[in-house]
Length: 556
Image 1 (cartoon, rainbow, N blue to C red):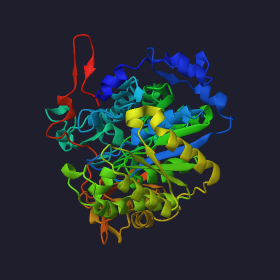
Image 2: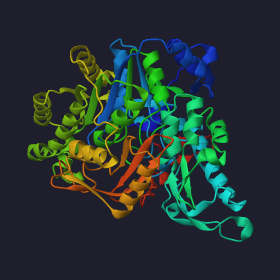
Image 3: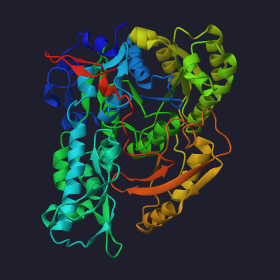
Image 4: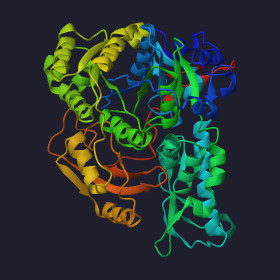
């Protein structure tokens, strides 16, 4: 069988001008980056702003397992399938991060015959958005340290610097470092640390900003430090937000590419939902809604993380109203949740399936709490038995959720026609009554407790002493009325990655709270989740190579 990259390299892509033309995009509204990718200008968004919106479909999933679920593959396949059944669809995806590409995932552009292309470009440097975000963030860091070096007029307390440097690469050695060593001219020595770029506030700001003016204002609100009297110091106090905006000017524009079957796709901003806001940009999603009758988008990891943030943060700020949720799972992943080892997942096991399906049940119930109808999409594998599939179908229908089998990995859009038809039927017959989970006027503690009890099924929440202290400071700044962004393991509904299925009788431990003032939310850190991941023992980078003709291998 061909690998993902081999399938992608065999694709005869259409020129991006042709893809854009089919959407009614004018040549002057397109900024090509080569032949097969382009940015969409601000003029396009302005021209279409009064056009009616299409239907918004969110693709999410159960908690990820080593068995795999295929959320992005389903998203791409569904977009292709919508076109197969005669619908004008456009896909809105998150950009891959280089850290996971060279770490565990090896790529994030879909899989099999449901991919976005050019796959190598998308998984690597793409149009440079990640580099622009990295540079803008680190410019602010450099200006902060330079300010302290050059007299420190703002009287910044070097012990209370909140801003972190970033790098779009998994590198555990940068989690805790000391900077400014050497001598007087080399800066002020202090403890520092790096985050991965996609966990940064600048990334979230890019995703949530409505235009350049909003971007500049949000960047100026970034809390960088406190002064010696305990007063906040913001990026605008350092005069950094103008130059940061200049670096991000082009990065703010959504990127247009295509799928293997030439379905248009906007890829812009995004991951990770376990440590950040984890959704593609509001600008890209809104533009997709104007360009197509159906917009198929995704959120990071399971619905307890990505979908919750999509609803409670992105939809709240963007005024978005989803029409349908597609919840992705596999028979293998559900059996894994039921206690079956990874090596035994190909054998029929209805008892394990019955135990593990409670994970799917929680995710279905969670989505219904937002008032959005649900379609369960099961990625079919050859080892799945009729009895197993029948059991899942009956289970989903008993909960009022539609059920569809997909084979988009092997068959592309043709393998997703059943899902596309079920999604369209659901949108036509089951109106969405979307609403957010919580009122922002609740305290941060109350908002976190509501998410923990309603979405994770926890008994309650425990805040450590450092978290309480940080929260008191955030409340003193008048920011306690912002939405919350919970950093939590993606592998479990709890904050313990080892607890599969539907954990019971647990509490969520909040070890720290930070303020993303420019993005407009409070970050709540639970468990031992890291905002700078490390590489595994055998990283995907070991398989990735490039020959003398520039042909890349090993991406998947």
